[in-house]
Length: 288
Image 1 (cartoon, one colour):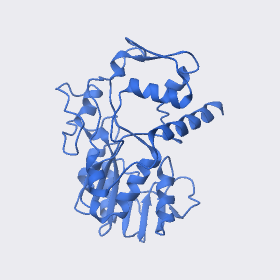
Image 2 (cartoon, one colour):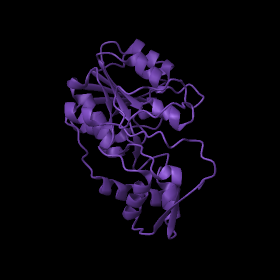
Image 3 (tube, one colour):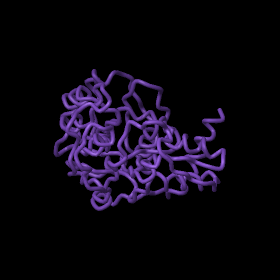
Image 4 (tube, helix red, strand yellow):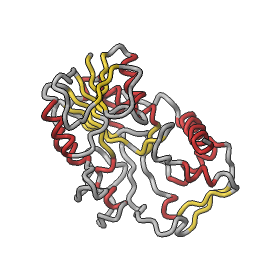
């Protein structure tokens, strides 16, 4: 199978590329960053895709704006597409950021749960809702990713907690302690992307991706601590980080049963092992 990967050079991208190439597929990565040593690559601007850049399946890992989506739609007309989206499309995300004040939508959020009623959550042209609207078709698979953690995580999601674990106590805001946001380990999420790429049954479907359960943030602190060999106290208090610009009453827990049912997806790497690898990487980075 000829597979085009747009992006794919950062975080979980190289894992997706290596897995597809390792399975014997002809993979070409189109990107503007560093070279991909594992497979063929083409440098360029995604707004000006080369005329001969075509394949059987396109995996678009860097489609961030409506303009990106329109350019891809105009270029790739016959290919099946797998488009990476985000759980930030759900209305509860607007509630979390204080842009929606209605009642929280029931969790876990399903693929047909209400989407945000306002666009452009970051006051720039990023908008996965418009990406989904533009590229959605019976030939497209949309994958709504969770909060992804693991080595090469540029957001360093667990770093603030690990920094506190040099002492005996980790303090977490009392409002955040019970907050739930579905997470996924980078290698497991990459596996989901690969599976959706290779399975024709995924065409025309939208799937939430992430771990099957959603612990609270306080529970995550404890699990990260265990992976780090830390067994101190977790304290909750008001305004630990000052006035947080979020409303933790709006959970972003997602229901990931559909991709498990339809594509037989399951996590290859257990959470405990994933956290150990993540902690090791974070400590290497902080020591560098």
